[in-house]
Image 1 (tube, rainbow, N blue to C red):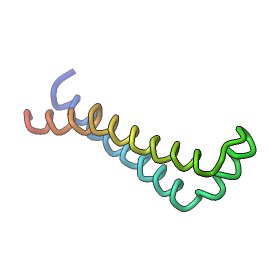
Image 2: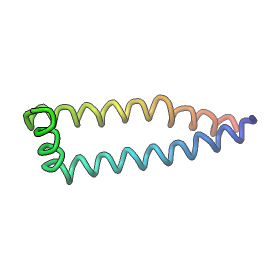
Image 3: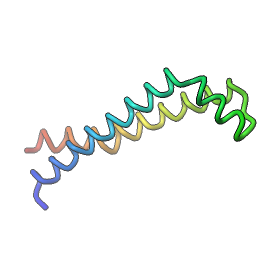
Image 4: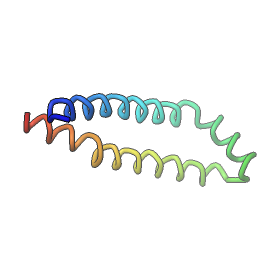
Length: 80
């Protein structure tokens, strides 16, 4: 596997993961009431707890995306 193939792989992985992140963020913003009702019934969680979890989830996803997906693609782009 050459550097060009690896760069293309990371590019598409960046596109897919960015799309998933944006979809998750949009769902957390616009479907918050639905998410709170479902998880409140399933696990008996308070809306404040669910909001904190969603905020933490999006932050963790963003950090993992930057470190393991975006940064390697930028490094490979600079190299090639």
